[in-house]
Length: 336
Image (cartoon, rainbow, N blue to C red; front, side, top):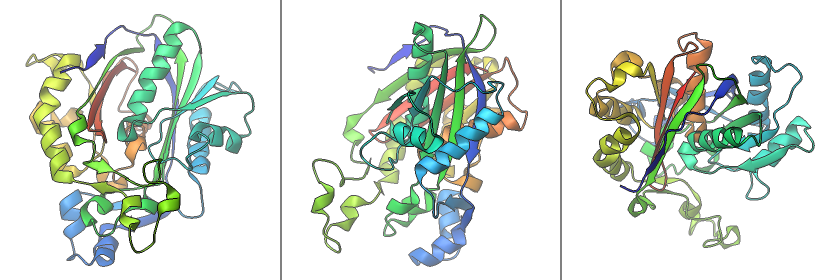
């Protein structure tokens, strides 16, 4: 395996988190009716009871709402981040970057902005990038925002993948801190490109430009496609050896980790990963039933819930873990 783990502790602290969920709730029973599947089919195959769909708002507006909440819940006062990173997997438009559209929505001028695109692993990748920039001294305060509107690009001829997805946004504020307990402890990423076409949207880029869309002929090329069983097999074959590079393979490795926050891909995938890695059930956080798979916002939404509920306490260690299109696996370890 060619994955490289970064284990150098970096003194960086989560200063605040926020979220925004659209008001429209869509149940799995509604999706059964939309896709023509028997009652209960979507819930049985995805584990998602309800998800949110955005209506009348943009990804930038949702991300800005999440970031405002994070700022309100932080102790930054009137201080703003020096860098704004978007980790979204569903860009509002191809150009400019999502972060610039977020800055415009917030009315922030002369702030550094860029995107990190790793689809469902976008937050974890952005966290590693941001922590590295803090370590260099380039920035002391960084905001990461993942704002996803998946509902507009679903292929209703693929009811299982369409039934998984939900919309929402999450924001996390990072800051340089002293030599205390809060630290970014390391991250690891690996890609198996033989699985690159397992999860994809073929149209919209330079290979199949938007001008090539012919309604009724090639519309499915411009919609989300996922071969769930193929993704499951590839993840299952590699997850154990992959994660051992970051946290070891000893039988007591979970003793030093207080919480595991996985990407909420699907309930069957979550159950399989927990059992495969032998994670104690009480440490493994699931919320897919209420939100669905919210792409890159999935992990920070779950992290936000863990923090605001009071379950994640300062000094505790949390493992962020997930997969993404590519096919990629990623994980990060931090002490909150």
